[in-house]
Image 1: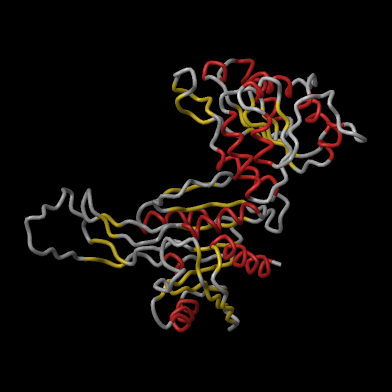
Image 2 (image 1 turned 90 degrees about the horizontal axis):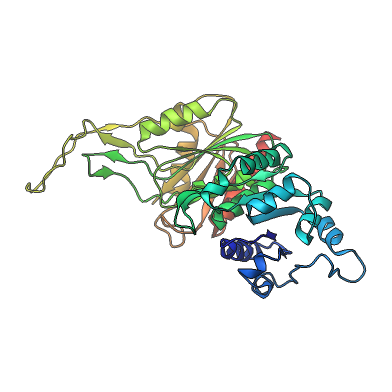
Length: 385
């Protein structure tokens, strides 16, 4: 982790914490100017490893920058100032960070952070373009209020976003490399009037976990998502939809050359026949809505790809899931009881049963949705192979 001199250094501290929490070994190299914003001790306390700042303070035995460069799986510069970007673009090596970058064969991610006028300067834009041509992954910057008070592009991307790019880079050679996976997520919304909707309790967490896990295993991922309160994942195609019919159109367009479709979205079965054009007033004692059936997306899509469905049930779990598996001609289906403790809508955990078209049943213990996503993708990989 290379940290250069920017007020956004505090986000690098948060990113270091998130990396350590995810099991990464983080060696931090700070430039002299970065040390003016945050002390090396702060990063050392989070990473629980020595922080390097001086090219001439090599450890015993190995040459310091060579040792770090050779042990690195991924190098990330966050925040990356205009100065450090220029040095990397032109191969300068006048401090520990730039010298280490020249010596490493690891993938490099650069996350720029600077004032908007600086970011749009011709020389900075040319240097960033050169980094991309060199094969360096450039992440951001985002648009927003900057330290100068200017509202422009130049903000360091948020730590959770950078973490997503890191996971994608580290997993790019995974067992789903070269495969296209389409995932749906969230609960669709059917308008009653301009204010009210018919929807459900789906949080989208399972679908998002699947999309991120597939990305982290090297897949090209398209996430078709209904409205959720979740942060949008990075390093994948995102298609936002609202209604079931919107989702049907998006899914059908996304299935060209797809290897698998995983329908984790909770799609409304019915929609109002004719939504009211104006807000309904509440002066009535009752209201009757005429509903019509929504399209059966999973049951109607055709193609040479793996079809995975979900069944959210409250009774007769295996029987209802098996019926859906057969009717929709699925490769396998993931079923759960949504009124069971630990499997409720919005929960971070779930207890699922996986049934396939060969008749096998695999009941998993309660586990995180991230772990369940990996088990589901293991099945997808087995079928592909």
